[in-house]
Image (cartoon, rainbow, N blue to C red):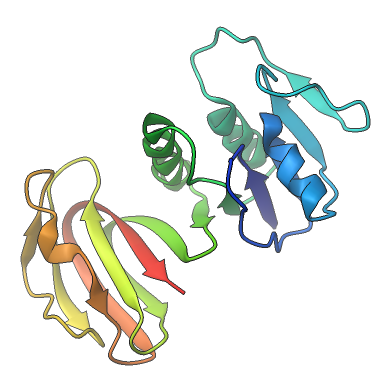
Length: 199
């Protein structure tokens, strides 16, 4: 089962592909622009009016989770194992960082979560092999997220991935690699990473 979570974003979001949509707060406005039907909207609605024509879960303004976290938890509670997040970028930088953490939150709750931006898809992964179908010549980046990470055994990439150590102080080696084939893979030997795959 697949679901989409649409976050509030000041920017145009990627085209929503999933049929079941959970809007986080003002994220429903992006759905309206794309003529997409929202199954449920959840949030404190401190930045938008509560929509009259939708099923709504109203949260307190003062709470310990973001509207995005509440939407993700709701999707997982409803049994969705594949979840796409739209509208992650744009807005305040601290909110973007918090939104990126939704990928790790979903991963650790047993869901496969992808952030779909107009120009790239973003994944989170921990120790193990990561692979993806690529477009030759397109950029991808690997960034440590949380603890230090080590990636190795790169296949199909322009710049060698061989025991590269990534940390919050050393991110550059994972930035702007290029797909040399239509399939790319590498091993995450230690830690956790975000993978940005540009379209």
